[in-house]
Image (cartoon, rainbow, N blue to C red; front, side):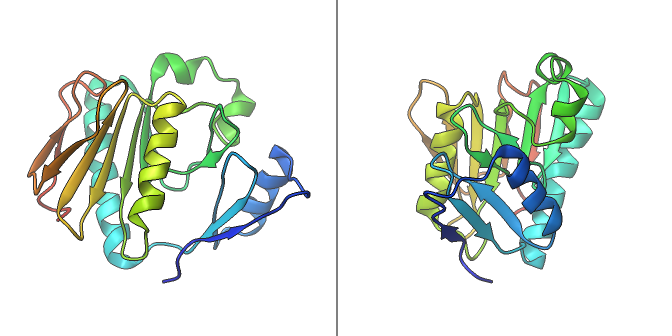
Length: 191
């Protein structure tokens, strides 16, 4: 696995449509774009991370199917954040009222909202600093709750609006609090 590669595009800038087309034409690569317009190229996840991402999304999707409070998205979904960055969290959720305000065109491209809930699962090649920066960016753009799951150290960093980051050591569950009411993520299959 390679570490993410950042390509400075200044003074060349890709429009939102050009960036979307670049992503569609190169589906074997994972692209993000920071708020300066720099292109971030990431390798696809390895088997262990992909399997654990799938488990996380399964649990979140199962909860959402029962309560029907919003929409769940996987790591392939692009979100256009208010600061101009294009990000793809490993797992994300937005409430129905936010989703229902989007046009059909907005739903089909990179979703032009910041998810209320985001989750990043650190893989072997991920820099902890870059993931922490991403989590902070999500908060600054409107996320209400974020979890950074660091399997290597068996720690979870919890990001909330207006509060200090909380770090849990080897928890077995995480609560969705009032953002994802009654959602409990079972971390045992994730560790």
